[in-house]
Structures are given as structure tokens and as C-alpha cells.
Image (cartoon, rainbow, N blue to C red; front, side):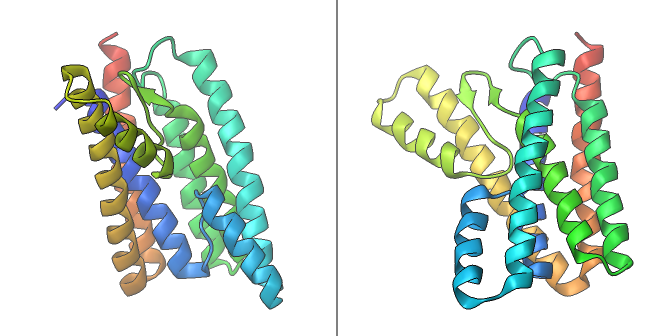
Length: 212
């Protein structure tokens, strides 16, 4: 399998896993702007101020992380391959691990803050692969692009694009299922499993950079 493609699949798995896991723990998404905006309005209408605060923290930190991730990408990447992002993915893993530590210390807000910031970094870094615009922390854009591609006919380029988008969507959904099941059954210890695909993506990215 193309290593660039494998990095995308691993990171979509992480995106789905983290979103589902955080929702199981705190009924808040950490990498989904639309979902959190809707949840925030629901919690506001219901007067659930604590969870409204969690959604607000997640939204702000995800956007901030996306900004910093985009700055990193523009500075270090010269093509659409996920090169030179291994250091940033390692920082992402550290942020997520630190967030889990804060959860253990009883700081739910700290957990949400660091998880959302970490996923924002990932979102800012992964913007495209080959000719496809992809995102690894949500699937709305990829789903729309896939439908548009289906409407464009059966050209070879369109088939390759569809496969990339479809695989990214499947990776996210599979990650969400895995994250939901493991976090529901094992709480934080199940959530921490997401570090495995994240570190694997970092290792593959480093190999891409080494190979030029």
C-alpha cells in the first residue's frame, strides 16, 4: 500500500476514534465543528452549562489547533504528500497523552482542551492527497466530494479520486466504531489505544521524509 495513503487511513482512524471516545466520556466532540456547534445550542437551550462549556472549549481549541497545524504544513510541506509531519504528530500524541493524564487528575475541561487542540493540529496538517481534498477529522467534505465525483462519470482519474475519498470515509467510520466500543467498555484505558495508529502514522511519515 502507498505509504501516503496509509498515513491518511491511519489519521482518519484516529479522527473517528477520538471523536467517538470523547463523546462517550463527556458527550462532547473534540474534532467536529458542526457537531459541537449543534450540541452547544442544544445544551444552551437545555441549560446544561457544564457541557456547553466543554463544547465551547472544544470549538475554540480545535480552531486554534487547525491554525497552528496549517502554519506547520505551509512551512514544512512542498507537495501533497504527508511529509515532514512526524514531529507534529508526535506532539499531537503527547498532547493527547497529557489530556488523558488530566482526566485521571479529575480535570475534564483540561482533557477536552488538549484533545481538541491535538485534533486541530492534525486537521490543519492533512488537507489533500493526490488530487483529493481530504480531512482526517470529519467526513462531511469528503462525502460531498465523493458524491460530486460520482456525478462526473467514470474517468480513470475520477475512479482513483473516489477510492481515496471512500477509503478515508471508511477509515473514519471504523475509527469511530472502535473508539466508541473501547471507550464505552474500558473508559480512559480504551481511549488511549488511539495512540497506536497515531504513532504508526508518525513513523510512516518519517519514512516518507527519509525517502525524499
